[in-house]
Image (cartoon, rainbow, N blue to C red; front, side, top):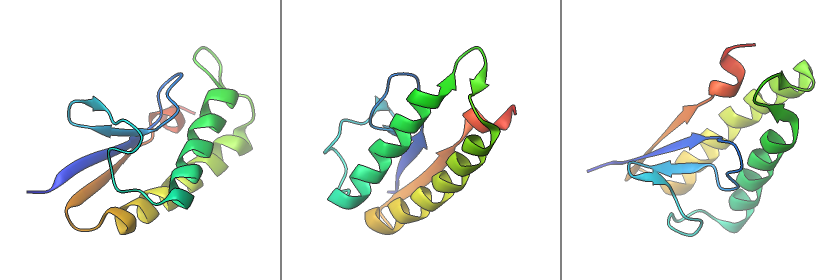
Length: 96
């Protein structure tokens, strides 16, 4: 059975990985240290530069954020392996 992991930002969330029951605790998935740091940096950039009323503070930042999300999804899928399905939910750039 494949475990579905969502890569998704949400306000104030520092660890952007979600399991079927809700936010995953950091350390609950076998993510390498370097990738874990990149995931947290990606979530931190969202929290620092995305406003729930106004969106991104810079359209170029939104583009870079989306590109990084695709890279992180691929890296995470490689890191976790075939027992997991990594799904990217990038709601924060879909309404630009």
